[in-house]
Length: 261
Image (cartoon, rainbow, N blue to C red):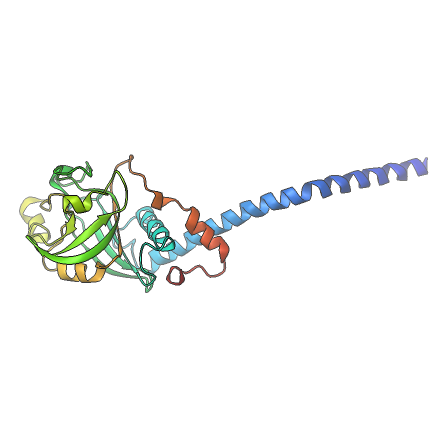
């Protein structure tokens, strides 16, 4: 009887060892992959949050999810070598906010500093106080959403201005053809709001106040990233794909730093 008992125990142990041996490699690989992905996502979110907090962006009115989208696009553009390695500046415009609010932010990501928070106009075809409609169509006088690269400075009908190149096909790729540029406008600023309850509007350009235009242009010119956000559920962009940023984090999960990419 005792021999049968120990024989049964031995058989159970051998069967268990066989099952564990068969399952372990796949299970460990699967869990390792999941945990690795979760760890990379967590580290990336922590890094984005650290930038957001250090630059005081919440206090300035910039929503975290908008900053996260802008930063994800910036990271993708840097990883794909579309911006210089030393390009530290990220400009964010949030047209989901009223034109009465300061809805342009210029952030230095390397020093984690908010350089400027100011007013910016939307296109007359997009709405009155709020920008509600967006288009890349010529003569629509509407603002266009998405990621842009800033380019060269030139003297135009609005004075010193800055060329923009739209990067999102179907949403802002016609920026050059439409002459969508950063320029100064007298209808932007507190005095305009005091007079008419909102900012004036452009023909689609992200126009800024005359007293800050030189600082804006000097700071963001020369292949830096500008992201324009708005309430439009149809907007999509390949630059919002987190795959490449998370792969970069996973490759060196101990010291992710955008300045070293």
